[in-house]
Image (cartoon, rainbow, N blue to C red; front, side, top):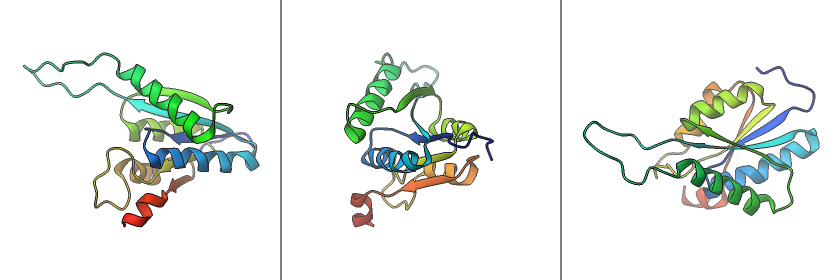
Length: 148
């Protein structure tokens, strides 16, 4: 487990989904009484390319991820917030597990944009629960609770 100061940082994964917005709200609720900082992380990567094929329109992935991160934080917590934001290039599960090394707590939504309808928990949140270096909170959204 990470060796952090008494207050530490609550890290939350953000992908723009309703689940990640609810995770942001819950992370803020958890961070405040702990006196912890709040850091929202969005992860982006270029699409997979195959020999002989050219991916059209690969410019702007980082910029779009940054826009989604900014809009999500503002939508979930309002324009006047003290959330640190960070963009990470790579796979979401690895990036969040790495971020958990320096976190007091990691907060993720139950399922993000990559969800498969029958899953009870998404692959990213499942990997975080299994491999994070700090406690993990998986946040359910009212909409997902109604459908399952």
